Amino acid sequence: MGRLIVLEGVDGTGKTTQFELLCAYLRERGVAHRELAYPDYKDESSTLVRMYLSGAFGEDPDAVSPYAASTFYACDRYASFVRYWKRDYEAGTLCLACRYATSNAVHQGAKLPPEERRDYYDWLSDLEYRRMGIPEPSRVVLLDLPVETALDNIRARAGERDIHEADGGYLRRAAESAHTAAAYLGWRTVSCAENGKMRSREAIFADILEQVRDIL
Image (cartoon, rainbow, N blue to C red):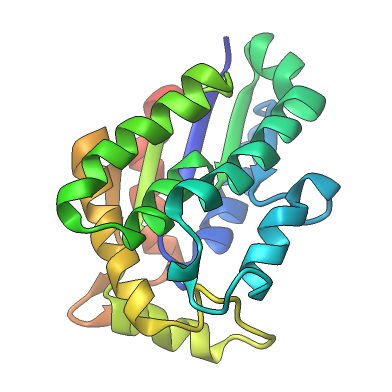
């Protein structure tokens, strides 16, 4: 089987930038790999995800049950795995994902009281990795950033914000859920800020590389 490395974090932590740096690092060294990003907005499999994030089921993220919303994302990943990268993964290819089932743990776990989150993480792992059969990550790296800094980064971006990004209170709960999930599920954590300020992308990437170098 292959190896699967996932970069995770709440909105505004710079996941996409760090994912691109890691992919470029591997390309420069001639390391064969598959690059994955979720949700797969270009594919029809993400239709329910796009409807959910646009507010079609309610503009408040809490309007949709975390269990229902989790299935929207899980089906998108299942369709992607079976159609596009299952063969490569089973052949031993290194796969990199910007967001994955772990994003359900972060964002949907935010909708639950803290005392219910661990049961939800267990349910989620059973649903996606065992019952649906998508690969379980070999390594998850959580990009950690103070919520206020993440919100500043989101506000500085051009374009419309989805229902998660537009709700500061929800983002705070997502950060709490991310920390709980990381401790419970054994994720690695990289701090993206120091003394209240965003660290350079090069410094963050160096720390990410240290967390994954042994399985590249």
